[in-house]
Image (tube, rainbow, N blue to C red):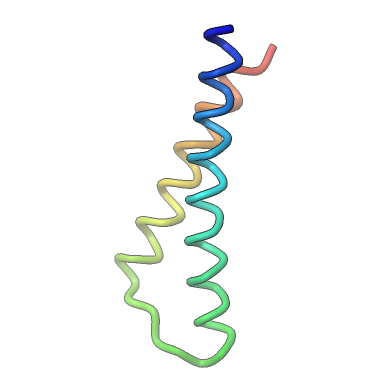
Length: 58
């Protein structure tokens, strides 16, 4: 049960980071200026979460 809960937490974290990245990209596509550090932070967080997920998979 612990692994299932951990994967659920990771999935929720990944969804949150993905949502933030989608919001940033939507703003860029609408011509808004997105601060570069904010964009890099979102991409780094997403990459980190993907790494966690990959390590959890068999």
